[in-house]
Image 1 (cartoon, rainbow, N blue to C red):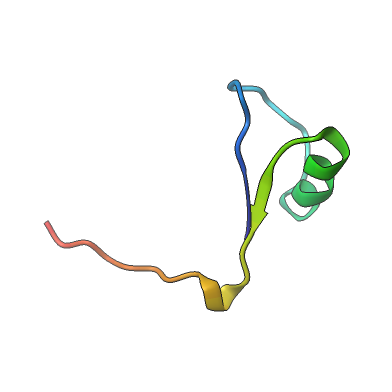
Image 2 (cartoon, rainbow, N blue to C red; image 1 turned 45 degrees about the horizontal axis):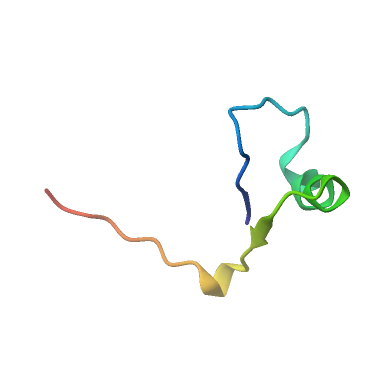
Length: 45
């Protein structure tokens, strides 16, 4: 999973699989996580 943080609500035309490369090419910070690093939880109300 790749997560990117943009400064504004800008629209980009990039496929999710190309997001990391897009960020690298444009100087945008992004973070990439592998599946063992991600934990999903369900919060009960």
